[in-house]
Image (cartoon, rainbow, N blue to C red; front, side, top):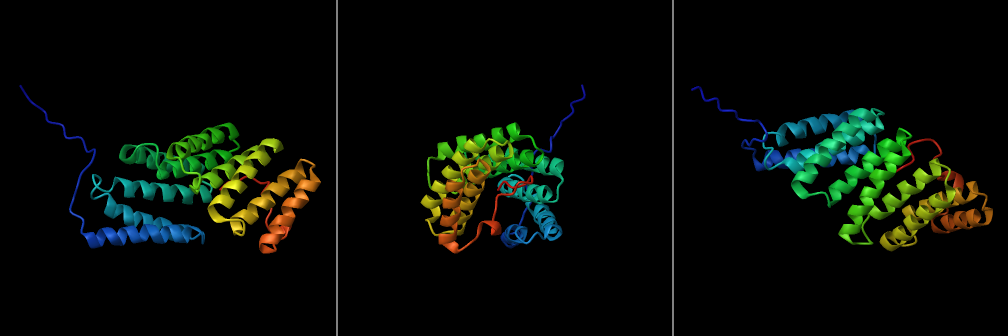
Length: 239
């Protein structure tokens, strides 16, 4: 009898020095910073270098690999390759669930980004499914001061705005505004922007008095006029 031993390559571990690991983590931090500068090619270079280190020890570095996939997913979303973005974010979510379970901050970020991808593909119902999954996780965490709440409400507000359901859009922008006041206070840039988004929805719905009131509140905070920050009617206005 011939006995064949199969060793599936599910996970493996090699020695990675603490210095090498910290350097790789710093590259991910730098990549996150560069995201807001839209330096996408440099980010992908950094994530590739970091992954080459993290992948040497998939047993202990799974969560870091999930971060790499998530960041790359954000980059490819911004570059307009939604299929590649979605696959990377789904890989990040799968690892996140395995390491931390579904009810964690990283899962919220993944579901939110998956919703944004579907929003940009005009798949609003599918986007809503992902956003409401974020809601379920945020509810389980049980903190009204979690920074995921205003992002969630803003994304839902943008989704219903795109569907021309201005009542629901206004409802969620108002929820987001209230959440931002709890987290950031009244005199904060995010709060200011939410007043302008809410004003834009009210204006679209024909409630000009409410729209003007929202614009005035935005101007009170930072002196920003409505034309300087308006809700984006083109696709891609989610956070």
